Image 1 (tube, rainbow, N blue to C red):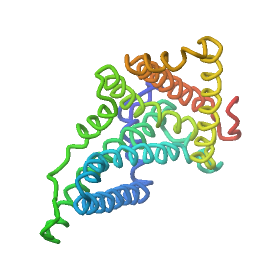
Image 2: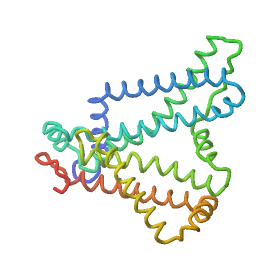
Image 3: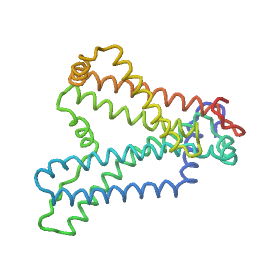
Image 4: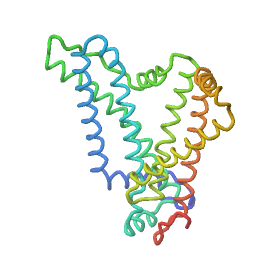
Length: 281
């Protein structure tokens, strides 16, 4: 194995990738099975509810499978990304991680590839397989009044669901950017939490994100009340929503958050050592 390049070497990287998969294959397989089974149950129940509902309820339920899958994707990314650097929890885990024959960049990229990129790809694969399972199981049931929609392409269906929130094109365009950028920002935040707080990372990161959201909301409301006259706030809000300005602001903030979270994750991971978990060291 070539060890001359201490920053990145493809042979070392693939070896580290195989090592991570082999050592954690049970956790990976059980996680994939859990996602697949949960999505299958949700889709079957959703199909039953949609079939027995009247026209009004059915129209309201039309986008529920896609919305549910999008919600499940967000949850899965949070959970899996928070487990990325769970080896940092114990001294033995840190010793095994930092003394392995691969560079810091290779260790970081291995976790990104498996627990972030891999989780997104596997989730959509599980969603498509669960949808086919729904069709197969409900076809075997064979109820006369049961309507079984054909296979759903979730990559396009979720995108249509997101843009369907607003019928105005600027709003729909902004929502598309928000959705795809959130796929970078959300795992980036929980990846950062996994580096900062390896123990109970999911709970600590979620709590920190909620506190941050409340602080940002208070600041935004305060600035709005100070800068905009009270009798113009309603019209101002209507204008920025209908023009797509609000969604563009949110999309830009999502992009900034993604860069910030991923950059901080890498910077703080480089500063970790076996002895101390303190983020400032």
